[in-house]
Image (cartoon, rainbow, N blue to C red):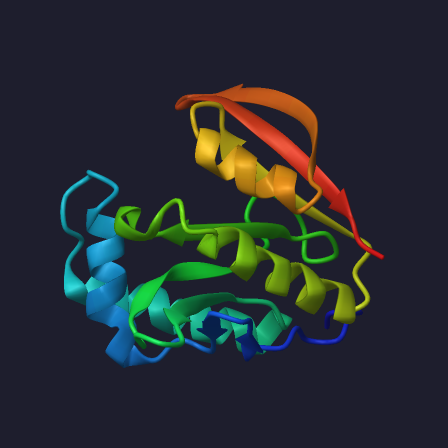
Length: 167
């Protein structure tokens, strides 16, 4: 059982809303995953990813949340917390947005809301891991106070570990 309060699964910012996944998000998530350039994942696999995320959120109190723009109501990506390469005590912050919305500050805005939600759970530190080529992610993490901790290498290349102490 987690020693922290569950994070809020309903976050709002000036321009964005984040709430739990629904099965109706599957086609949008599939399109986002397709943009990675590794082909289109089967819709059933995307539904399984959503179902697994829902179950994990219920079990451990942290989640990746779909991001929608308030005004347009459209799905533009996701942001949230996951165990990833870290731990439930000190989880990773992660985000992925459609390329068409890059450069508008949405990732930074969503990540700040997730930082606040993480701090409200009583956690004292978060991690993030970023591929060395991902300049845009480094900019977002820099804006929200993350600092480089170390670099490791795996079969996909260099992986930079960053950390942020929470108030």
